[in-house]
Amino acid sequence: MIDFTQVEFGPCATQILGDFGADVIKVERPGVGDISRTTDPFIAEAHGESAYFMSLNRNKRSIALDLRRPSAIEAVRRLIRGADVFVHNYRPGVAERLGLGYETLRQDNPRLIYACGSGFGDSGPLMRKAGQDLLSQSLSGAVSRNPDADGRPQLYPTALGDFSAGMILAQGILLALFHRERTGQGQKLHVSLLDTMVAMQMQEATQWLLRKREVNWVTQYLIGTFQTTDGAVTVVGVFRPNPLADICRALGLEDLSARAEFDGLANQMRNRHLLWPLLEAGFARLSTDECLKRLDEQDVLCAPVLTLDEALRHPQLEANGTLVEFTHPVHGKVKTVGNPLRLSAVKTIALRSAPLLGEQTEEILREAGYQDEEIFALRADGSLG
Image (cartoon, rainbow, N blue to C red; front, top):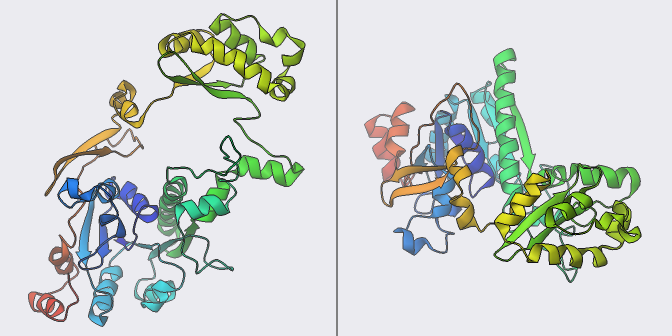
């Protein structure tokens, strides 16, 4: 895989494939590299190495090429002639200006899978607009559906669009490889952040398109987060004939569903301002562990509200093998979040640390057939980092 992606959208797609054995060659700018190498605000605490970059670029090799040089572009094309996949997340039109568009590269390698990601699509009025996760959240309608207590739209602090679009991009690459296995044909595929964020709301969008009805799973159902004596719990009162009765039974409260104002979901939501204080009082007198124990006994869906630190130390993550460790050449032992996919035929996943900028440049060029004198010439004309 020849990987021109940066930040999160593309790198998480190529990393998930690299975890399972794909040879991912990351092409970066000399002296700068992937943007995520420098955007970590705490980089000085990590010997100049970005935690962001390390989290998204394990099991890859780095080659630093100055694409302003014709000889560097030729080096890329030589790499691509022997590659299975070329992937980038440039704005539409940028790869073409570099001489790396699909129509050009397919002439060199008809079996090539050409995968690209963008912010908003490869056509239409926003195709050349700079894309970013938070912008796609906003444009997709997701942010407007997440207001705070005062009704102000709230951004999600986790890169939902980037990660999800990356996973779809990885799926697309695998589907294209399977198609090529059957037909011998390469192809181009495209994924946008905007389409992904809209697709994540497919239930809500279909309800709106069909009936012009708004859907909010938190405010329209018996779902909420409640303070306990030592924390908070989330309760999801759905998929049961009478979840309110089950919750009341767990908390030792009277059956509030027997009251006329709380009879049925419609009345419970209509009178939410009356119901919620009664439930909050019930949760507030119990510890988190006691709440969870009681709710579990009634088979009510529930979970504690954990900080990220608490979540990373949870025994379930240890049992799942969620966190992994690799040795970084500068930072030493680094813990990160591993691949969530488990395959019965693959018992362990090899872990190689995220590469230093240009760490494998000469190694990769030699594999592409470059001789020592050619590599010297590339370095002499400024093509290499």
